[in-house]
Amino acid sequence: MDAIFKRRSIREYIEKEVTNEQITAILHAGMSAPSAGNEQPWHFLVIKNRQKLQELMGLSPYAKMLDKASVAILVCGDLEKQKHEGYWMIDCAAATENMLLEVTHLQLGAVWLGVYPRVERMKFLRDYFSLPNHIEAFSLISIGYPTKEYDSINRYNPERVHLEKW
Ligand SMILES: Cc1cc2nc3c(=O)[nH]c(=O)nc-3n(C[C@H](O)[C@H](O)[C@H](O)COP(=O)(O)O)c2cc1C
Image 1 (spheres, rainbow, N blue to C red):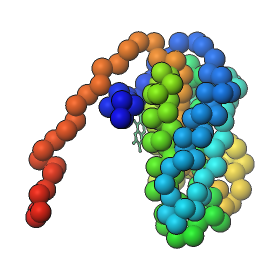
Image 2 (cartoon, protein in one colour):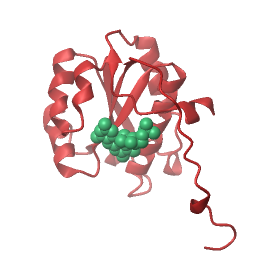
Image 3 (tube, rainbow, N blue to C red):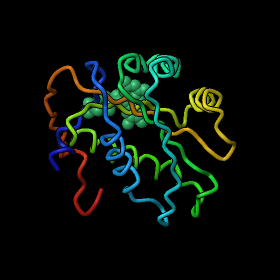
């Protein structure tokens, strides 16, 4: 629960390597997410190469933090692994959030870069990584060591809670 309440989008990083063990822990968390019919329709593309991280800044105007990220993970959906059509992106969202929580637990920082459903961003990544036709880019997670501590924010809003009736 600590990780849920402490998680923030972290966009500024110090230069420090994120180890392969940490990356594996983050991927393990992603693959532990719930999925429709337990279809687990995901793949994860790990990017550590500095030049590639910088080229990926071309994804959108909101991806500049990749310049200093230690690693990025592209979460992809596999359309051929769907058991229940139309759920792959929801499964990938659950995996993405799980990974953000593990990042927080490891005292690293990350931000979810939106890809799906923006077709131009999905195409940018499809072209960049030559993704097969049945693979769709869903989200890109930028990860590094935070430059500072971030406060958690209490977003509990009683107006969004409806008891027994609307
Ligand atoms: C689907 C989705 C797409 C997002 N895309 C971006 C993005 O492209 N660039 C970015 O800097 N932050 C992005 N964010 C992070 C949000 O801006 C952030 O979660 C929100 O401002 C709340 O702040 P917090 O994560 O610190 O709680 C995205 C978040 C989600 C869930």
